[in-house]
Image 1 (cartoon, rainbow, N blue to C red):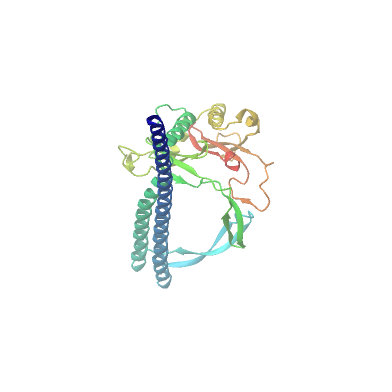
Image 2 (image 1 turned 120 degrees about the vertical axis):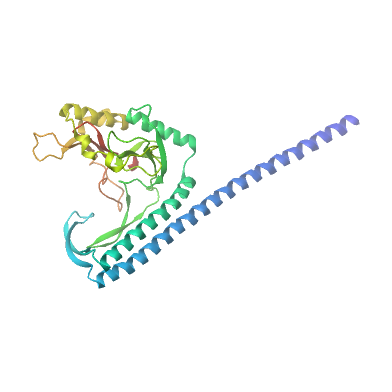
Amino acid sequence: MNKKILIIALVAVFVIGAGVVITFGQINKKTGSQKEIQGETQKDTIKGQIQAVDADFRQKMGVITDRQKQEGCMELRDVEMIETATGKKITEKQWHVVSTEGICGDLFNQKEELAKERSFQTSQLQTQLDLLTARSESEREKAMEAIIAFMAKPDLQLQYIGTRHPSNFNVGVVTNQTDNGYTMEDVDGWERKVEVYQQKEYIENTCEVYEYEVDVRNNDIVQVGIRYPQEGIIANPKKQNECQDIRSLETPILLMADIKDVAMGYAQRGVKNFDVIKDKFVYEGSAENPKTISAHNAWIYENKDYKLPEGLFAEAPSKVPTIWSRISSGGYLIMYLNTTGLFN
């Protein structure tokens, strides 16, 4: 009798215990989903604040621009442009500043101050948004390891900047096309995000650094470019008069074979199927004389056989899967771009 009572009691405790576990599991799920909802709400709030700052900026700039036109500080001029969608040359009239004297100077300075204020406000908000959209620290570590391997610099120090759309990749549906341009809408399944990093050291004697874009899906290097560092990236920033021009990277001039080796080295480290496509890279130089070594030398691959699904449009420079490896005459990386993975 006592044994039966004991068994029944144990079963009751087990059932109650299981019930408690289930309850805690349900609580944890609810807590997790609540955090996700709160996170999305915070993101939407910050995005709304950024849009409000931009709207206020445009409204105030519009008022000042109208005043500049009234005071004769600006005039209409014909400007030649290239249509992105068609590649055709067009001429359209645009307002240009023709005077910064007297009242015109005051109005010009007001615009400068407004631009600085907007830049400060949006950068503060963007920093908050970046923290909310960032991957985990361990995932960002993997991205930085990929950058270090790509640059072949084991001691390279990097700083996470933020998460955004790739600089040179955009696929969508063209809407509202006119003679002056078009608008493009995003399409489900074609949104791409990259994490942006800057290195914590100058490129040689310049005051610029390399900035890297990494595909968040697989840590592939999408783009490397030269930028001025964000504030706080460099521990001991140089004064402007201590900086050499970016053209200093063009000397001493290397042999073309050595420049190509550098370019192909970056491509080999960054392109997964490099051995398959290595013979399809086409050289493009900046010098008019083909016998002269160009200041900038690019080896470019384009998969022109690739076709987007019907109705979709890709903007230049990545209308098709594209790879650039652009090297200075001094053997320094000027720009690297690989959008082949973004089309997948």
